[in-house]
Image (tube, rainbow, N blue to C red; front, side, top):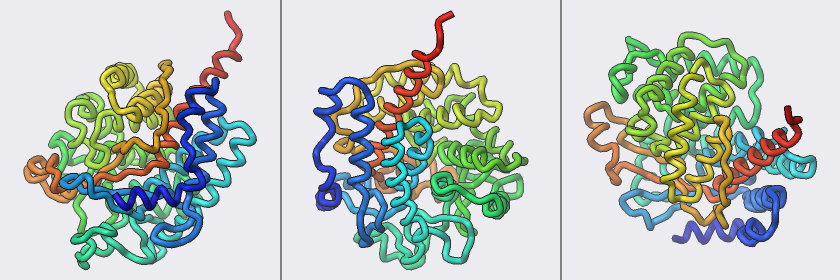
Length: 393
């Protein structure tokens, strides 16, 4: 548990919890201000194991969940920045100033994860000092695994937070097309009905297998929509893959197979709702069913952060919801993202080992819990304000 203590030291400037404030103060604005303050206080201030501007991440092997390691992936820092960028227009001026300072500090860490050869891609772990599962007693010794291939999920998330120039977006799109699937490069670890689609692969590597992941593709289509690039056959194929997952309700009855990296129903519903609210891509017909399933999942949810992201999903899908915020989201070991070695295998091996704790690594980020709660509160406040300003008929 030493990694938890290490992060506790890093977060010392923001150590006072917001629980009493969330309970005692009326209105969401006070909680929003305190969450922004804690995010700012929780950023790393100087380079070390983590780079300045990052939000610390923790990792645990599912076979030994109590053995938590510090992990210097950029993934959750990128998610926090993307979340804040999306909320920024809905913040009050003072909130926006604090938001901008958090984003500016975080962006300073991004170059450490940019491809060293000049490609416009990013890596999960630092590219200037290649590592593989840092702080692992065994895996970090695998020299052949250094460096893991750049991935499309991190690349999309980081560019959405930083903002991508048009010329760079076109270069990246060409790389994405070159690594996409199709009949000649079949995805052998997904559903047969969609295995031949020329959808975008999760990986840029030559040796890594073609992998179609519903959560990743939601993020990728958000990136492409924001970049303003003209849709092509790979975009259409990615939409068709997501349409299959939605139509068959795989996010509900088979989430880990539909999305290796976001393998839980509440997390996948959150991803789909974010995409459909911004860039529906002709998938609007699935919104009522997804909204109903979000309601079902919320009624059954016991984890406070699951309730938060399902509440956010419902707000994005045009529903109303009023949740009691968790007293201290950072204390929730909320599982938003995993790494699964089984994803590297073809079927039927992938199916056999998909749920094996020997293959799974859990990743946690206390600061991202804060960002997710902030997102819910800002959306809720914004929607309440827009309703109150609309004149009655």
